[in-house]
Image 1 (cartoon, rainbow, N blue to C red):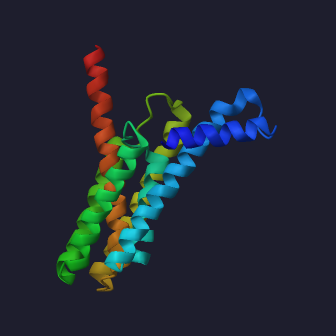
Image 2 (cartoon, helix red, strand yellow):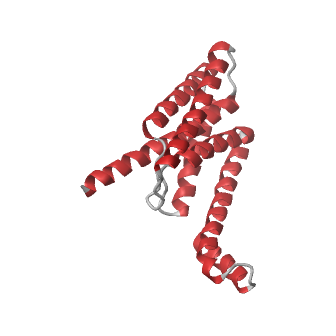
Length: 199
């Protein structure tokens, strides 16, 4: 469905002379990503309104996307699968964090950011199957991932242990980071399993 819409949009602009014929496929893929992201955002924000966690949802998505943008991670085979997986993941975290006691939320926040840092140190970045990374780019992306994860660790530790602050927005951000790092870990395991199977 999304692919058909993207192809139609790219074809329309091609017929109008806005997009060169040889670039239709590239633009079509770009439109697919935009449409898929828009649907993803709409679904999550609709759920956020129901749960009353709009700002928390934004923190979750920003944290997730930031880590995935530099660290890679698991990609579902279809846009529908990607949208559904992310939506279910958000629902689980939103429901859980919405009703967790404050002291348990603090423990969850700390555990999430520290586990994320460990995963990043062990696995990030994970290259996509059709987009291998050069050695220089891998080093650069790894440094960014470690920096992002470290900032979250420092901030979470300061807020929960030293300042005794329990901010639910930061808890959602920590959940987003953990979800992003779990995606990286899953993709890394699949990548290594595939390599060892090919041998």
